Image (tube, rainbow, N blue to C red):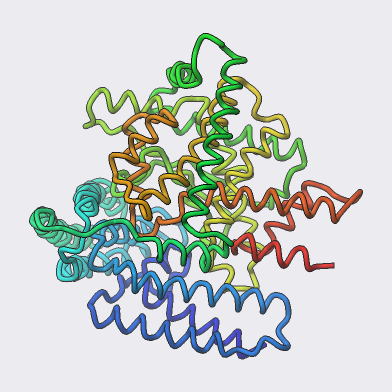
Length: 546
């Protein structure tokens, strides 16, 4: 229906124009020279426009829509309802200093690292953003209030220091490869950004003394996300109970496996010994790259999933401004609106300024067994490959190309860990211990997620729970909990286990319906053929097809 497509086009144009930084991240480069408007009037105006778009989408007549159009309409309404509720409940513009800084780092780094245009052209776009950055940072300072949680102030200060280093190192290095005149312009603009950052740091230090906000989103917001954004038939209380049940089951399985391996040592002691077998920091990329290729080979040998031509994932170091909340690594999947099928696995390097004990913990967290257990989740057939399928499947659906449900995306990632155990890739005792420990970790995340946001759990209690139940070192546990507390993370830590469970249930029902014609590869390819909407919507679409 042309009416719906025109409405979707208008909505996405508004989304990209109002958030140019996110547009760049997604591969839309019409607004690369902008940072977006951050004044309170602009924030209120954007919310009003979303209200109007939601009213118009709800008014669309569904009769006569084909299956793809119905999917697009459902996703558009979910996206708008979620954005508006977050606007009302979270008020991130006045509560999250790290949000401004991480976005600004993304605005710069995506222009530096992504090869969508020649370096000189990307350098000119970077110059525009650098020139606008002091006003952007001044707006952040004007917007932030004492409703900021103190933890968010600390995260903001860490992100500011990281962004300062990123400018000195990465941006300066990029500028040095450009024509002299452009390099000089970039250096002058960087000087202005550094000055504005220094002003913001001074402001944040003062704000930290009077900050009195809470990071917990509260049960009402949490339940909204579960039921509307994720399309789940549960609330925070039932999710908490589900987490407790799975913690008990996963712990029992882990303990039983460990007893078979060594009845004289606990699973935690065995994991502790396994973590001593790790690469040197400079070899982290080689270690993960080797495990990535082994996982890819297993996909081919077991005929688990289609590997589209041209897909590839690169190993790179994580930008400094992101390291505060990402203690190990993060997947940078192929941008949905950009040509090509390339992703990046961004690895957090060793901090040369950290204490010897913290450096030791960091190396242990990157041990060989962990690398094998996580490469399949993140790359093959995990996030990288899923997003490649997402991109190819949504060529005619910009709405679903834009939208991404964590219950599906993270559920798929965790599902692949069970899949690789089932198909024989995970079998060595050291890796199996990590796989089972990681399953317990994802279950404990549900307890912490609900605990932090609906049950009064504080930061230190959550860190201690990860240390006690999952035996994470303090370095990794603190980084994890910081991530769980951020404004856009309530319910996200739970999405791994919940999504995996829903995918497994869908696979079993699909298998029963297919009978003798059932093939695992067919299920995976079909599952990934809709983009990345909530699993419940995919199940409804798949099971209604003939």
